[in-house]
Length: 119
Length: 119
Length: 119
Length: 119
Image 1 (cartoon, helix red, strand yellow):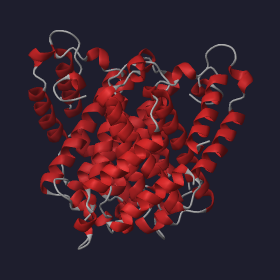
Image 2 (cartoon, one colour; image 1 turned 120 degrees about the vertical axis):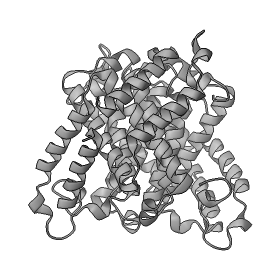
Image 3 (cartoon, each protein chain N blue to C red; image 1 turned 135 degrees about the vertical axis):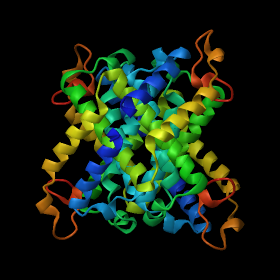
Image 4 (cartoon, chains in turn yellow, orange, cyan, green; image 1 turned 180 degrees about the vertical axis):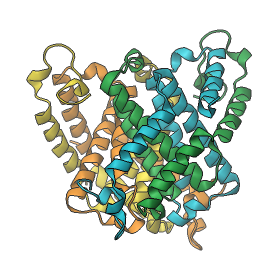
């Protein structure tokens, strides 16, 4: 069974057993996702670029927990809306691969926002 | 192969081919995740609870695309930090299952924030 | 003295006295704002529309504190970038007033996202 | 008249004239704030620390616009809840000034999250 479907099934059961299903509207779940992302951000806001690769120990565990919360809510939103998350991600990858042709980024040091009409 | 690991490998290759790897610090990726979540929120902010379950057509496709972006960045952050996202999510589920005992939520209509010391 | 300028001066002094100025890049401050907004969201995520108007007591105080944090970081970002926040807000109001003509919203119940090309 | 109260009055009138008042629940407004913060983040996500101080031209104008949107929604949330935003911010400053004593940050290079029990 796909790992994300299994995760969503587990969390859905968790919710159902506590009578929380009626609160799991996509609107509410999107807010819950936002809250978890906010907690994730707080671990990185004062770190330098280099430090952000070196989180370890208790901080790394805390970050893993926030990432976990994000993934749970992300799969729940997709679950409530009947969206296949992994398929959508591959579709998006394909679109990105076309939008940013490899050959345009071989010289210099151009980031996505420096290409075409993006600021 | 696990669907998330496959997705991360694909996006990592996409990044490497465009010389963007140096910009993929966890700090930057966390910001990129935040931006995508913001776009997701915009689709739901003026909707009622009921309407949020009924997104369809072009809006549903746009939502799927934002969810996809979120998943891509989430897996990238985990990838850069060497965190097993699905394992972390199951660990978090286990913790939540203990934190909110089923029997405490059989009567009435208590939401997570109404339990114990949470507001 | 304008209340926002006074607030920014106070927080800037707070930062300088603790040798944190070098960490107050707009990039970091934007992340800090995001974190505070995430905390704000957490107070509202499981509330119904109606309940969200009725926050009171300790929860209202906690919400006021999050709003305060958001305002502090918002003024700090503007301060670091030399942007006049209130002037920018009035300019945006003017733009919005033109973008959504009053007469287009007198009948029915059309929200911003239901007007023109927005979803 | 205080600049923030004036701004809130203007935006409240804008909303009332378009029959949007019923949609301006604190819950929805918090989501709208989140969306604007997400747009703000997108301008900074791939920038280095130094570059983030140097935004100029069209990008600076776009950033000013996002900051403006954030301020508008922040004042609207406070307005709907009857919270005095500036008073709350000064209260928070006072609390922060006590929480991080100046003398603790004179040596070395300690950031907020490196003090006491914070990660």
